[in-house]
Length: 239
Image 1 (cartoon, rainbow, N blue to C red):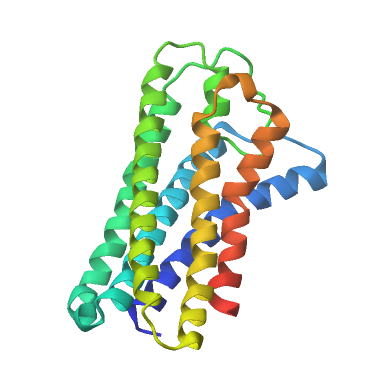
Image 2: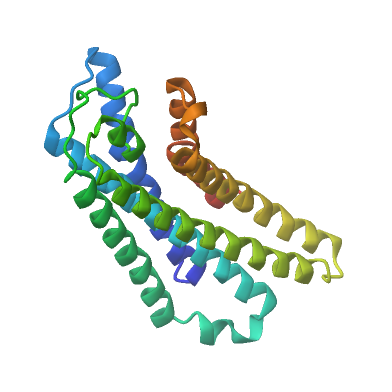
């Protein structure tokens, strides 16, 4: 349990648990008690925690992909490249960058004046929905921050895809069919969850307003905020 894989799994489990606990309990409370109110402080806290745990998750998924790449493609250097100190530094960098990203977005979003009401067609506070309530031209600054975050997420996704190309090339050279099947059955679900998480998140924040609708926004939010954290325990633990 002290190997790098399980160390990163622990961090990923904490990020999944945090992202679920930030939105789902409040949504369940509102549904059971037939209410839809949340305080201003609760809004800011929810937005910060959502960005914090989502950013941490994509960073940790990228680090876990690097762990698999080193273990399969450079096994003789595994102890050097992924020692306990290196793993601790990578995990700390993931959480620190997630904290700074969340703090930057939260501070900038709640500095915008809201003049188009205070009701959102969503089960949690999300930046694209908040920008619809803003009447300030400074929301272009927030859109720029979103574009930067999406670019970083896309960069992580490109790194993951490139790493998996190298992994699959190495796996195909394994002489044992059972070994190849085991490697593919472990890698493909992880790649599917990463693809779902990144693609729906990018589409949610960069889709054109002409195709936006409350039902589509709700479905996309559930896909990238609820489904991947729910599937990760099945993929990484039960298998």
